[in-house]
Length: 85
Image (tube, rainbow, N blue to C red):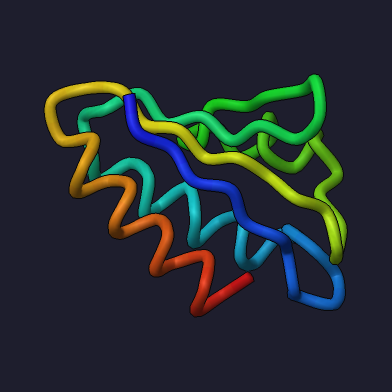
């Protein structure tokens, strides 16, 4: 399993537009992808689960990937977070 932590810099956090793009990005991988905030977590391929975490600017989240393409998934998702969030 691979993971990284990231502090959200987007002024409104993970809102509808970036969440939709994030889900689309995550669905391109076979690995199980999970975003964790505090003691809550959500499958990155499920938009409503992701939105329910209420991630705001300044929150630190952890993204983990487990599966056959976990290295590629973590690399791509880390780049996505840096560009969009």
